Image (cartoon, rainbow, N blue to C red; front, side):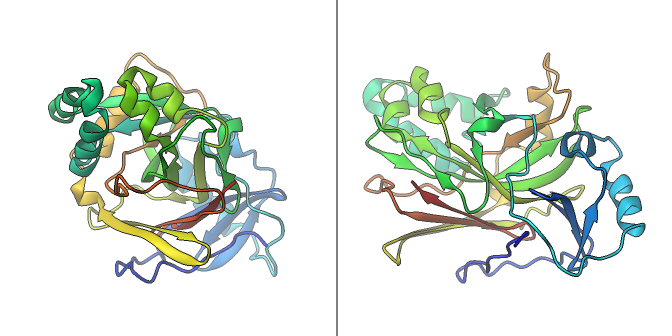
Length: 294
């Protein structure tokens, strides 16, 4: 069934009023909008053409107003991405700064991360092409040549072609910490590979999210919880608009783009993912993104 609505993590105490928000699901049977706990199929809607509109919120309100609620919601979820590029920002949380400095210290690169945390210009890097992205319920991957792999739970911005933040989704930036730690120049290999990026379960259409919005992760192995962590957007050093402004300098995105905003939750150095691990990331009011390592 689409969309799936997994329960929020019990450890997450933050809640949000979702009545004023609209969610978009990309399904095999087409685009589904959710508003007020009702679902509407948006007929004759191409995902790329729809989400790239600069008047997306107003357009969706008109489409929903002229549609009848669905009795049943058909189809399976797809990742909420069409032909867009996926980019990412790094070292936007103090916890991430510390982790990057520690893992690269022996290679002499620790100072790089301290400098970029304090610099005016943020760290931005290319993360994924659409075919490397998986959605909710699909398998993420760890590199075969990595020995220390972790998920990075992040808020992801959807940015319109004109540079406006039009929506939000949940992202898992799968990363090979040993490869990046060996040499910062290996960052693309540590970050960009098949199934290294998960997005979903939907695209939340909203002008802004409050700083109190929480991000929580739970990793389960053989039915047991092996790691949990949580943070809030108020821990971010940089504003989302600042990240977008730098990304759009001298770059164009005809269909818009997705931008990971960095992680504030880092597992301990003794932890590495294994095949079969289940990763659940919750950001209210978006929902929960769940993937298995495979």
